[in-house]
Length: 353
Ligand SMILES: O=C(O)CCC(=O)C(=O)O
Ligand SMILES: [Fe+2]
Image 1 (cartoon, helix red, strand yellow):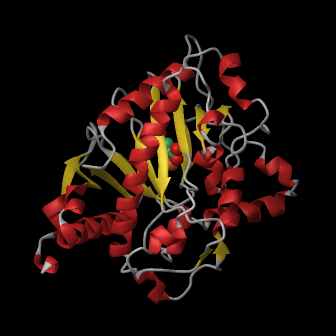
Image 2 (tube, helix red, strand yellow; image 1 turned 180 degrees about the horizontal axis):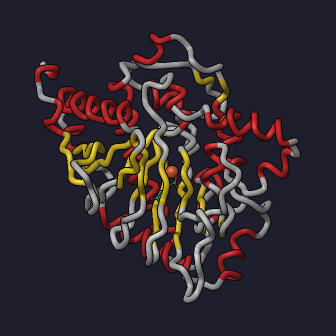
Image 3 (cartoon, rainbow, N blue to C red; image 1 turned 180 degrees about the vertical axis):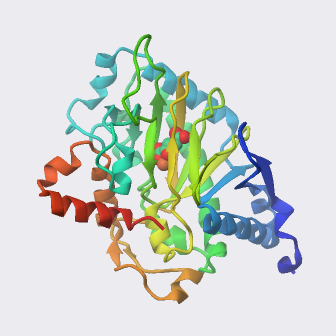
């Protein structure tokens, strides 16, 4: 029965954000039908799968995360980032330095390295990362509104993950509960990314971005753009850079390298970047479908029929390496000669699907 319904019943195309030659290829998917029983779920699943196989990106509306929870989190995160540097750094006491270890990072990420490019300046971003298994007390206690806002968001996004697990089971023809069983240990982090404005008289370094050209690392990225300043995010489609459209109350979903590999390349980890635009910008970044560390990634879904394109890898090992790649010191710490560095760079690029 569901096969006869037009796919476009829950997908609409929007015009690209401002400049556009034509209509954007990025799908906007209304997820409301996930509450409508099997028929509606299948329609959403199909629409998402089509988007992930085509561009690797989808903009989704009618999610279980209400705008009020986003607004509260956004407000308290902004208050955190607006504090003096020394105050922000206090949250790092007792943790090893660097992205992946210390919760607060300032100019300590280099997105381009995720595509094996070690020549680009570091990104113009500050971030605060929260890993739920570390407990809410690992977050700063100032502003006092931050912890409750993170908790509230966490509960809502957990429900969103369940919905995405269900949609992706259906989309890839997996047994019900497949993704929930592989991703049950709560490995998803919340990353608040603050992009400051340029100070008076300051200039960008040559090639510097808010986030350099990269592919994400894990399962599905769940990204909430800043309604006050949503511009700057672009995805590469063929030879063209396409603006990701901003839709009120929406999330952007995009496929990470791990999930692309897990689907044997059926879903694409698309290259994207965040250009510098004037004004501050805050992104709320979380994820879904990140497998537990001990899961071995073996191809699943329709792509598996094409025969294994990648060596099986343990999810925890894959993710650990990807986190390390963000750090500006990554290459230096490897102590490689030029030839080995080149080989490594090509290896990393091949994660791209
Ligand atoms: O802030 C954004 O718009 C996207 C950031 C991004 O691509 C990332 O954090 O992986
Ligand atoms: Fe990204």
